[in-house]
Image 1 (cartoon, protein in one colour):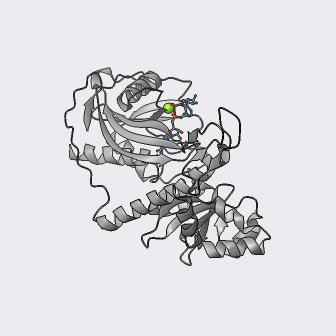
Image 2 (tube, helix red, strand yellow):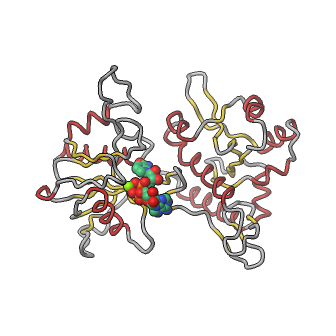
Image 3 (cartoon, rainbow, N blue to C red):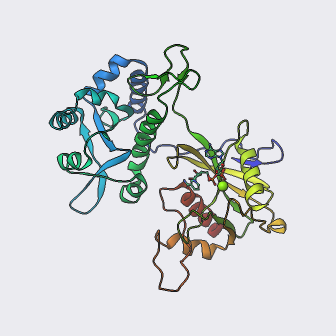
Length: 345
Ligand SMILES: NC(=O)c1ccc[n+]([C@@H]2O[C@H](COP(=O)([O-])OP(=O)(O)OC[C@H]3O[C@@H](n4cnc5c(N)ncnc54)[C@H](O)[C@@H]3O)[C@@H](O)[C@H]2O)c1
Ligand SMILES: [Mg+2]
């Protein structure tokens, strides 16, 4: 989609997206219908849990295992194995029922996540032959295909841990078996897991792209501009406002790229776009409260930054090389897309 910011003019309303390759449609539909039923039917969900797969977390750190080749992968356990571990560590099996539904495997097994933060970490690791890893670190170790599930598992567990009470009455809320909602017992208020919508945008002046850094970023890392949507805003309005606020530029057009669930620091729904500004009005006027720096990068400089590994170690006394967020971050995708497009033109 290419949209002009100042009007509702839409140049290309239908952008076809190749969504999921050549997946077998009917089994995809049946898996989604199955998950839908488990969210609505507590009894069916409890039954599915007994034969399901469980991804363990310890205080929100997922359990990973290392293969002989040094690769890491998610360590899914059978629910029966989890019960065995709970029993051996003197914990009530009922803890398994605090699992939340996160998906359905290609073999039609329901998948759950469970936080065993009340158990001794080292003891669980030893029994499972795995290791609990901070989620940011896990992203560097896991294959890209595993990151959405591990992110979703953590996000849902965190939401339950931080939304145990009704915000109107202060009473404890009760969750359904799938963990897809919580209900306040007296006023019936229903709470659903929340994500904060965020626009992330790679701005270009036709020849260069704009990358910026916050003072809290790791040394040398530059990224695309990002900002939370204000209540009532459209994606286009947020994008236009954030670019104006952060770098003092007026966006002329924008194009949707893709989206991503981002777990840090809380769940955000990242909507990634490309945008252009006029090369005649491309002077950056930095908002120093939010950003430490923002600079225009040529294609060559951008490609150099894309080639750098995360956290590069330079020679002593040398300034740290400029690098961009790693592949699992949608900022990286935007930057790669821009570089490919730029080479073509
Ligand atoms: N996945 C990626 O590639 C990628 C890249 C860049 C940024 N991000 C994420 O985008 C998010 C937003 O970026 P930003 O920090 O530049 O946003 P921002 O420019 O909107 O500035 C953050 C400030 O916005 C305010 N704010 C308004 N609504 C908020 C909400 N719902 N939650 C938290 N703060 C809110 C707070 O005062 C906060 O300090 C961050 O969480 C960041 O982790 C992800
Ligand atoms: Mg920002």
